[in-house]
Amino acid sequence: MRNSKPYLIAEIGVNFYDTARVMDISPLEAAKLYIDKAAEAGIDCAKFQSYKAGAIVSKNSPAYWDTTKEPTRTQYELFLKHDSFGENEYRELCQYTHSKGIDFTSTPFDYASADYLEDMVDFYKISSSDLSNLPFIRHIGAKGKPVFLSVGAAYLSEIDEAVRVLKESGCKDITILHCVLSYPTAPKNANLRIIETLKKDFPNVKVGFSDHVAPDDTMMTLAAAYMIGADVIEKHFTLDKKLPGNDHYHAGEPEDFKKAIANFKWIDMVLGSGEKTVLECEWIPRREARRSLVLTRDMKADEVIRKEDLMPKRPGTGISPVYTDIVVGRKIVKDLEEDTILTWDMV
Image 1: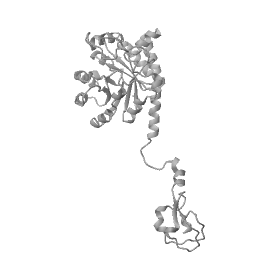
Image 2: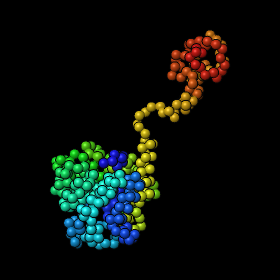
Image 3: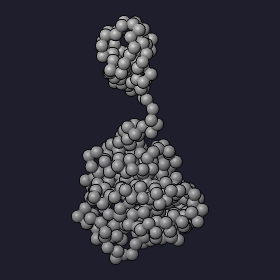
Image 4: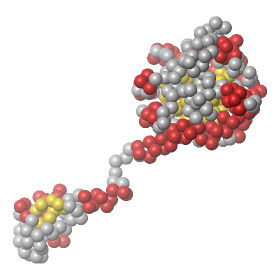
């Protein structure tokens, strides 16, 4: 896996099906186009979703998304529109993604998908919807791969139980992703401070953020998540936010992801190292802006310096005011004019 910080995941999901339709190309061609654009944007990982409608949802499960954006009324109907890919297609996408120099994963929503993905994915991603599906979590954890676990719509006790199951199954590399299971998530509900809570309550795992807030012009949500401590950031990825469909209207386009990456680099730059020292850029200002002991009157050689003969003034090229008590009582070694900056060879 790549080691970027934050590690950035483009959640392509099944958005490529809609792009294939409007561009009149095959879904596989569209999926590869998404991978191309993700790699060009500097994203670390292209992520898909692997499922069959009949294995994920009962036929009468109601929609829980914004039906003004995605009018499909049942989950089954929606999943059925996007479940044509299987092992062969994902294997081809895996190879193609790796050929572009980025990581590959796909969220499995059933045991069959989890099994055929095992030798493809760089890590497993488990959806928030499966957080309480502990047998499934145990099955994935036992495969020995890193696991990223979204924890949307969950209590801390449920997260703790899922993490314990992963550890008990032998999983040694766990990342939990703060997530709000609302599409799109209103900014006031993003609740990014949960990232701090998760880092405090689960100190032995990595913590990140799976974002469902619609992109703003500055991609501020992702920047804030990174500043507050997210090691991993996942966001839905589309080539056109205006496309109808379940995941386009809250997804980011390639340019949005480029802005986010630029923000991360800027944040790293301005946060710096945390080491308090004098920077090279401060050397001259430090010298010129600090103060030295300066004479308040003309003085003759061998005159004794009194406290009232001194005033601290800029620049700091002479004797520092910290040595005032040492200078007072000493003699001037030569005639000096008022406003002379004292140096040690003068006293």
